[in-house]
Length: 559
Image 1 (cartoon, rainbow, N blue to C red):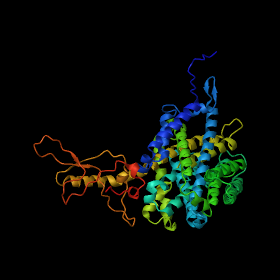
Image 2 (image 1 turned 135 degrees about the horizontal axis):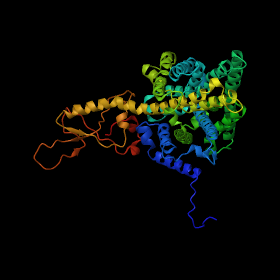
Image 3 (image 1 turned 90 degrees about the horizontal axis):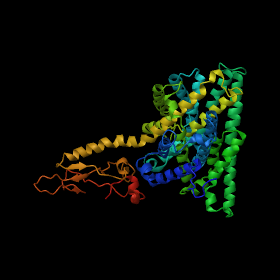
Image 4 (image 1 turned 60 degrees about the vertical axis):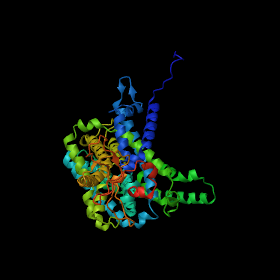
């Protein structure tokens, strides 16, 4: 019998996870503006690192294996845990993608997919095909897969650009200052549409492996292509497009009808896009079609006439839901990623895995977007082409296709006991290791590219300016502790929006103590009245109070 006076501690997994998640989101929220708008760090990168630090490879607060209920008297049943964790991660990724893609579709202007069909056709047709083939060749060369078809399957998983990570470069102060609105819309539309269009590339490889691979027992290339055209293209892709468009348009008309009669309150109106995402995700899952693509089409059809988009333009509910899902999914990824397998595996050693990650980030997308950009009118110059070509992140969508591949191997290329066919015995492990490693590379590299790029561009100029001014009049400059880097990172613009030299300089002026006085030198907010010495401006120590002002958003110096 338990002691009734004992402290009723309940150290359950649920309590620990909920407490940790709430604490992290609260603490992150306290410095979220500083990290995202001043340091340009993505919430995905921060959440991934926190997940690693507090997961099984760190403090062990987040224990994915313990949530599977696969415990036995001898410990955790590894096979059971892997299966259930795979199901959890797949469905969690589906949920995040479904909501994100409906919101991405809602963001686009009226009839955008139809009006910009030429640009999107180039990016989603030749662009995706070239990305797929280039990535597959790299995987074949570095991972040494037994067949090029295996490399095609791995390459298909990481071909789509991730809408979750792409949102980092089309939202916030950096996007407002540096990316034209037309280009932002193109990035959103491409990342939303190509997520669902990864199916044809993936199943082209998987069907050929099943019916043409060395272990194939029946069928052949004809049956593989028959399945690819009828099931993948007709049932999975075309049906999802039609279904998403019909559901989105019907939902829009029903909502307008209810709003005209004052049947809908404001809260229900704002959450209608989220509920649409859940409905499309669930119903498409029931019939086995492409729920990811259907969600994006439904979101764009939902605001086909721009009514809902304009009504919710200043609403903060959708970005809030977006942020909560992003933080949670990357926390989970950080705890779940098989970190030890990157070093200890029989598939691809680490000294080949790292060059593969670098090569994929450089060759997968950049050369092909740069070559096609002259026919995409939203990309107006070389700099924009390089930018769009480099920022094609690999994230949640790659994880989604990873588990689709593992599920296909288990169902259609394994025996009744779950043992894979001899020719695909290592395919599952190859996909698992390579895709997870490329996701980590993309989150880290794309998450740090903007802040490091800003530092690399502006730091030499700032140092040169300080050294030049240091040689005038014997003034000594000391760096100040600043709470915001936005003024250093941001390039000031004139009234016409053209960049101008930013006169803000990090530092304060200290007069040299040349006399015999014992009084130490004191900081001054302005230098001596010397015509050759530019005015030094103290950094704004209250960035939050001033952030809403137009001058602060432009990065202008304080008066």
